[in-house]
Structures are given as C-alpha cells and as structure tokens.
Image 1 (cartoon, rainbow, N blue to C red):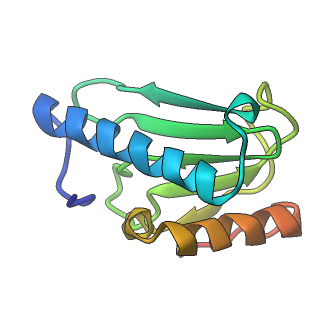
Image 2: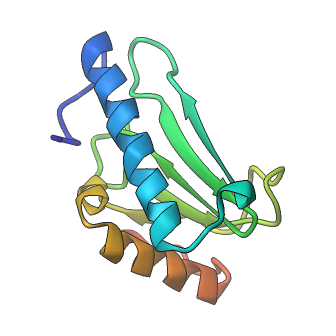
Length: 124
C-alpha cells in the first residue's frame, strides 16, 4: 500500500486506504494484546477533499491514521486517554504512515507513549 498517494478526490483510493488501515490497526491491537472487547475501531471517511481518519480507540490509548493535508509525514497520531469516551487524550505523539508496514515497530512506539503517559510531544 502506498500510504502517501493522495486519497483526495479519489473515492476508490480512499476506500482502499480505509480498508487497509483498518486491517493494520486490527493487527496493531493484536500485537499490543488488546482484547477485542477493550477497543473500538472506527472509520470516518470525511469529505471528498481529505483522506478521512481511521481510529483504534483503547481504554488507555488511541491511534488515529490519516493523510495530513499539510503533507507532513505525521499521519499516525498516538495519544493516551482515559477510556473510550475520552476524545482529547494526552499530548500528541506522531509517527510516519510508513510505520503501518511495520506493526511490531509501531506497537513499540505505542507502548513507549503509553509508558510515558503521553506527556511528551514527539514527531517521527
């Protein structure tokens, strides 16, 4: 999957982006040992001009994937949270979209954010 080819104004590409990202986030949840009952997996298609976002929301962390409109390589947002109704969470921590191709490395990054309590803002 080419995570960096824009989904804007490309409905088929956007559909594939969401499908593959959901599958990768499902694998991430398994890698992190999250039981299915303790996380939600959501997809928000957004408007035609954006990629939308795909979110893995656990009781203590959420991971959101999108193609930033700025084209910055910060397409994975990782934040700590206090339950699945906490949508603002801790500080923003970013990782490049390419980490979706290395789930063990992404899981390590998520664990680091969780262990730190999400206090530090970190960009790829």
